[in-house]
Length: 579
Image (tube, rainbow, N blue to C red):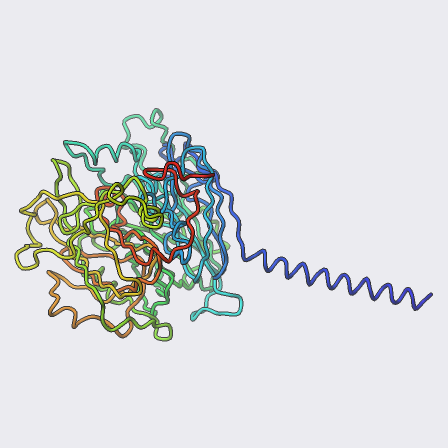
C-alpha cells in the first residue's frame, strides 16, 4: 500500500512537472504572436489644454505602445469607428518582408479601411529597434493617429551598451485647425498655408497659452485640465536610462534637450550608432533615436526636458516635460527657465549631427561599392493650374484610386490604373539654379512609378533648392517604406555626379529609413531593391506629401505571395473585396 501511495505521489509530481513544461512551452510559443485589438474613434481631447476633435486608439493619443521581441508576429485587429472617414495605418520602420500588403499605405499597398469595417494587419518584426506607427490616409497622423513600436532583442542577445531602465518618448507638433480645414486650404485658390503649430507635444502633452484666445472659456481651453499636464519621466539617482525618442511631427524639425544633462546617442532608426555625446538632439519627422542619460545631477530638484522648432522661424512655444529625480515630488516644476534650445536658423550644428552619425564599428553593414542605377530627385515647389504643389524633377505625385500593389500583382489593365510613363530620373543639372525661385513654375502631375530590377543596387540623390519664396529652402525629411538605406553623404550646393560620388562614405555609413535633406543641400542614399513589393518614398512632412512630394518604387512584385482580398475593394478592385 505504501509503495502504491509513493508511486502515486511520484506520478502526480511527474504530471505537475510535465504540465509546467507544457505551460512554459505553450507560453513561449504564444508570446511570439502578439495580438492587439484596437478601435479608432474621434473624441474630444485637450492634449495642449485646447479642446478639439482628435483621432484616438482605444481612447488615447498617442495610441497603445506595441511591445515585441525580434521575430515576433504582430496581429492588429483594427475597427474603424470613425463612421464618416476611411483609415490606413503604416508601421513605420517595419520592412514588411513577405507581407507588403500590411505596409498600410493607402493607394500604394492597400485600399483604405472603410468606416465601420474591421481590418487585420499581420506582420513580423524582423529586427530589434525603436519604430513607430501612424495614419497613412489623408493627413490623419496630424489628427492624433500615431504611436510607438518597441522591439527588443532575442532573450539570448544583448545590446552593445548598458543601461538600467528603458523609457519611450514621442515628439509631435499640434495644430488647432482640423486636418480637413488644413487640407482644404492647401487645395484652394488662393492657397491657404497651414501656418505654424500652436504647440509642441511630448508624449501627447503640451501647454497652450489659453489667454491668447479671445474667449478661452467659450473655446474650451483650460490649463488645469490634467490631460495637458507635463509628461513626467521619473529617474533614480545614479541610474542610466535609455530614452527612445521618435518624432512624428506634421511640419516641424525639432531639437530635444534635457536641462543640465549631456547624453549619448546610441541608436538611429533601429541601427546602432558609433556613440557620441551631445546636449542637443536634432530630430526630423519620421526619425527615431535612442539616447543614454545618466541621472547624475542634484537629486533634490527636477529638470526640464524641452523641445523646440528648428529650421523654421519659431512661432510655437517650447514643448515641456519633467525629468523627475526620485524622491522629489513628480509634480514639482523646476524653478529654472526652460531653455529655448539652439538658434532656429543655424544649420551648421544640424549638418554636423548628420555627418556625425556613423554605424557602430562592431555592427557595420557594408554597402555595395557601386550602384546599378542613380535617380536624382530635385525637390521644388511649383504650381499646377494655379494650385501650389511640391514636385520632384518638376513632376508632382498623385495617389491612384487603385493601389499599385494590387494592380501589378493581379495584372489589371494598367492603363486604367496609373500613368505608364515613369517619372524622370534627373533634372537639367547644367542650367537649373537651385538658389533662385523656379523660373518654370508649372509642374505636371503623375502617378507613374519607378520599376527597379529586383536585387539591384539603387542610388537616390535628394537635391534641395529654392521654393517659390525668394531666399527660402526648407528642410525635408525623406522616408523609404519597405527598406533601410545607407546614408552615403551630405553636401551643400548642387550635387555633382562627377565629383561628389568620390566623397561617399563606403566604410561605415549608418543605415536608416528616414533622413533629412538640408536647405540648399543634397543627401545621397543607397539601397538594395531586395524586398518584393511596391514601396512609397516621400517627404514625411504631412502637408508636403499631401501636396505631391513623393515617388513610388516597384521591384520583384511577381515574387509577392497571394494578396489577401481584404486589401481590395476600391478603384478597379471594387468586385474583389471579401471581408
